Length: 168
Image 1 (cartoon, one colour):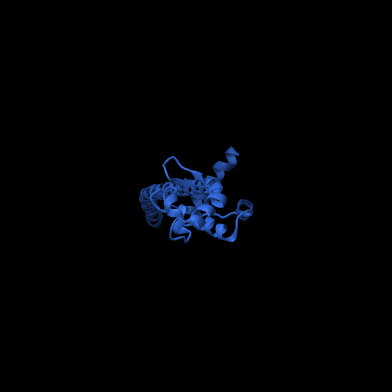
Image 2 (cartoon, helix red, strand yellow):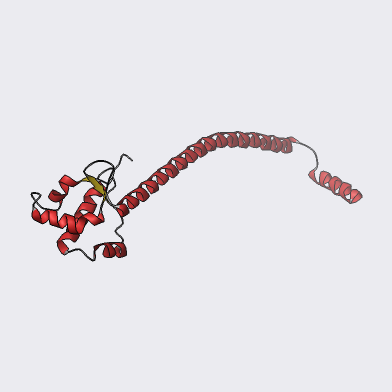
């Protein structure tokens, strides 16, 4: 997808299970890393940048210890060298992208049907108007015939009733 995603579901139970062993500092780093990775198009992050995202100016002993003992088990290496990601984050990322694609396809299909309906409606309305005009002409003719005819309507009605009675 060309567009970036700006949200993902943070499932409380999963998050608490994943982070019960972490210190508060490591939990904060974990959230920052997840958020930063999610903003990337492929949901990965270079390990060399992780310390700066977590607020450590340099890769010192404190960062190395925090990464090695607490954070590294929560992430997985990616095919590219020096990059890492998170399994649950990738799953959520793919789910959101598939929903966006489905909605996009549904929207395009909806527009196509609206356009075809509008085209069909336009053609149908022209045909309907033409038929109505023809019907109006026929009605006008009938009215004119009735206006200028000298035939007795009651006599025609009686004749029709006689025919029905004989057949019926």
